[in-house]
Image (tube, rainbow, N blue to C red; front, side):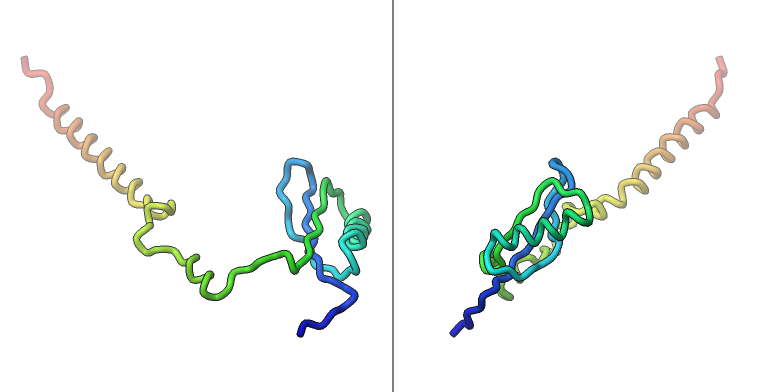
Length: 114
């Protein structure tokens, strides 16, 4: 049976400007979400400018279990989705340009014999 406590765990997220993304800052213990918001504001107002703060009760966050995490593995046959899969193109293009220069050079050797 779960032990009941007066305090609950909250996760605090904030963003510096209205256009920036939210970032996780820290966890805190508070008796309710209103008090958690006050505590988070007190913590931030003394340190840095903040455009918005989110307070999330940890019990409302669902994480993945071990079996679900297995679905996050990348498939081995999907290298074309990463930029490293195209690393050979620079070498291939250099080789192509070199062939073109060689052909131009060879054609220039013929000269104008009219």
